[in-house]
Every structure is written in structure tokens, then in C-alpha cells.
Amino acid sequence: MNTVALSQIIQNKSNPEDLPHVPVMEEEVLRLLAEIRPRSVADGTCGAGGHAHTLLENVSSIERYFCIDWDKNALSIARKRLNSHKNRVEFVHSNFRHIPQLIPAYGISKLDAILLDLGLSTMHLTSSGRGFSFTKDEPLDMRMDDSEPTTALDLINNLSEAQLAALIREYGEEKWAKKIAGVVKDYCEHTSIPTSKGLAEAIKRAIPRRFHPKRIHPATRTFQALRIALNRELDNLKVALHDFPNILNEGGRFLVISFHSLEDRLVKHSFKNDPRMRPITKRPLRPTSQEITVNPKARSAKLRCAERISAEEVNNV
Ligand SMILES: C[S@@+](CC[C@H](N)C(=O)[O-])C[C@H]1O[C@@H](n2cnc3c(N)ncnc32)[C@H](O)[C@@H]1O
Image (cartoon, protein in one colour):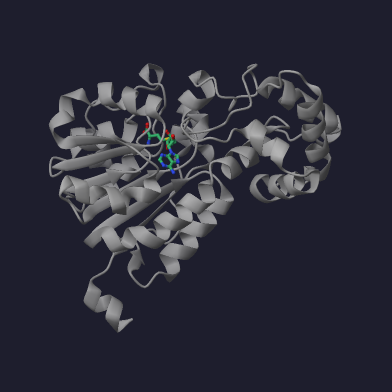
């Protein structure tokens, strides 16, 4: 299927203004999945169901579609959105790392495709009330799954300043990590009700103006680091990359959209070196400039895809 034909066939293509979250690289995801005519698909990061909607509308071969998300609010939005496809869809509140353990309960041991679209959804920033956004006075929570016991504030309080600096440096790739860690500890210790906006302002004040990044808020990397660490996002991805090839049928595809260089590095390395998988995208696919104009949040997305090879081929490697 070529790209021109593809954009013509997308039914009910998402209109960004109507959506709680605009799905990224929809056409590329659709092309990579439609060409294998999958019957069973697990969408490990279903979110508001944007990719799910596109795939269910356009890929008639799909018989079972698993919508998995660890955020209950996202799942309830997806449930409404996908109502017209409910006979083919299962909604599961879970961390995607558990997909291999949860699909047997639905009478399935292997899948034709798995999609991960990592990170935050727009709803987390705009309406979760959980401190992902630094433009609002929200509690420092940052749990993607609010049934987990530990919040970002607990994490900050439980770490030493040096541990916090290491975390901000590693997951945020932040040059000012040491200074910021001191400011974060100080803010949380001396503020009666610490909030996301208050913390972001304290970080902003701590970095000399001439060193403020041009396109992002000075607190962006710190918030990203806290979120990644608290929700063990890299660990979840590592488990998925290790375990999912075992639950893919031969020719089955694994697609990952990442927004962070640490995530993309893990995916690239795994797809290149895993003897069970053959990379389909030699280099990551990137959103078109047209897509970035409509949805600037897509700008850092990278999409990689690999295909499960046969057991025979694995043995011959
Ligand atoms: C970028 S959004 C996905 C958007 C979705 N593809 C769409 O088109 O609406 C990422 C989603 O993944 C979820 N998520 C992130 N890590 C997860 C994990 N380990 N297990 C389950 N859900 C996860 C988040 O809660 C969020 O809803």
C-alpha cells in the first residue's frame, strides 16, 4: 500500500480540535500494520484510543484488539470513543509489561502486532490534576497509574540530594542537575503545600536566564526525569523489548513510538540485536513537517518497527 493510497483510505481521520490527545504518526502506524493484515493486536498504550480508532476503522482483518493502559481515565475515554467497535475490543487496565501474562485469559497466546506509543498523553497535561504540567498549581503526584502508592513528592523526599541530582542528570539529560536537585529539595522541605507550578518556578529562578533553553521551559527536563523515574518507564520498556518477541506470531510486528533519546536507544539496540526480530525500519521514521505544523507535540517522535522471524530462522542465526 503506498502512502498516497493510504491517506486516501484513512476513514474519519482524526481532527486535532476534537481530540483529547492527537495521535502521532497515524498514517505510518497504519501502513506498517495494514500491510501484514493482522488479526490480533495489542495496543499497550491505548490512551484516548486515537491509534486504536484509526486501526479499527481501516484494518478489517483485525478480530481482537486489546486496549491496554495503566491510566483508568484514559481507558474510559477510549471505551466511549471505540464504542462502535466494541465487539472486537477488550479494555484492560494494566501496565503493558504484563501483556504476556494477561492475554491467555482471553484465549490468546500469541499476537500479530503490538503497538507502544510511549510517554504522556495530552490529557495528563491538561486535565489529570496530577502535577504533570508546570503551568498549573497541582499536587506533585505524577503517577500515571494512581493506584500505585508512591508520588513524585514521596520520591523527592525519600532521595538524598545527590541521588536526586543523579536521577535528574540521567533521565532528564540536564546539565544543571546538581543545582536543580538542591532547589527541588529545598522547595519541597520548606513549602507547606508544594505544587507543580511552584516547583517549576523555583527551578526557573535557579538557572541563570542566559542558560534557559530556547524552546522549552527550564523545568521541562526535571519534570520529565521525575516522571520517568517514578513510573519506571525505561524498565517497563526493557521488559517489553525482552518479552514481547516471544508472544508475536511469525511475521508479527512490534511498533514503538518514542519521544526520548534514552527510549529510542533501547528500542534501536534491541531491534538490531535481538535474534528473534528483523528490523523493518532501518532508521526511525519521523513525523512529516506537515504533521509537526498541525501537532507540534509530535516533533520529537521516532517510530521503529521490527518483525518476528520464524523459529527456524532464529535457530539458524
Ligand atoms: C502518548 S499516550 C498514547 C496515545 C494513544 N496512542 C492515542 O492515540 O490516543 C501514552 C499512553 O500510554 C500510557 N502508558 C505509558 N506507559 C504505560 C505502561 N507501562 N503501561 C500501560 N500504559 C502506559 C499512558 O497512560 C498514556 O495514556
